[in-house]
Length: 409
Image (cartoon, rainbow, N blue to C red; front, side, top):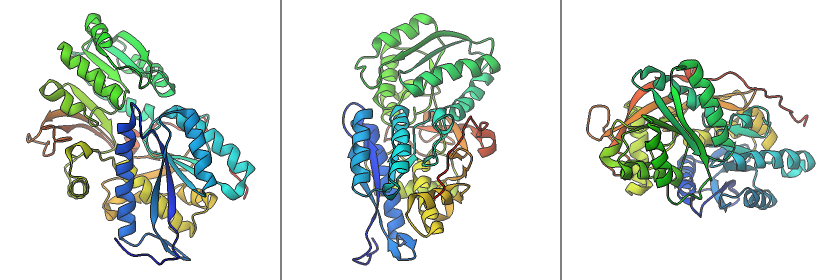
């Protein structure tokens, strides 16, 4: 690790995330990604600003997955001088943080902060609620869903589909938009189930799996994440369901290991990257991460989180400061190819709504060692092979109803 001058105060990035409780595994996995991203920046000299290079430091604020606690953590972070807040594992939390920051940044310009969002995917966050202070680095629900629907549309054997999701803003939007997209692309497809369940509170998904079996569904479409996804698919396996799962997050956090052979050719996921992309940049990227985090249970790498930190650094260096308004203006319209920095990803921050435009992969679970699957996930013996690749222009969705209010100074 490079040594910094004693006077070089770190640029603190405040991670507001559920780091404990039923969905804490997702928060801890995010933290490892961010630690690795900041270590890479610091190893090459930190953020180069006119007053000298400064290291990055990730500060943890455990929200316990609660909106109220997240707002409390936001007040604590900005009160301690944090100028960049990172959050993603709940669109409901992201929405509350955006509203709070809009008010705070207008009321107290001396304590402004940015919100960088790596996983909250409700389109409203860059649509009707779009904010100058918020930037989303994940593909939003409609982008991911459109990619999955393209694959569903090509499966002419599929006649019956079951929708299930978490009962909050993301899950609610997903069920509505899925029906709309499927009606357009596969009007013959029958939706035989459509329900929402409490977020992070269901301990036994067997009743849901039983409903899925009774419906005659050949496939399930779900946006579930964390333990809500792992437990759902585990129950399906235990019940012997021979259904496909079209997921947003089925390639991580224990799902491949839980399913084992039962998941082969049955679990699909959509993401901006996966370990079996296959080019040299991806191989180097993944190898470096696994060297840093060799434990199988720590095998959770998302290229968008790495690109997010690199784009933040590029924006700060372009602006010559870590002042939030200047950094936001530099982030707008920024294009970055992370491959030159050891990140197997690239993107463009669309200035009109602060939605990152990026490629997407739809992949399917297969046995590790097969053609196209050199790496497994989490030591499970199973990995994912690319089924469909969409470049950034193919993955893009039209601009939504964003009327962004920009500060004059």
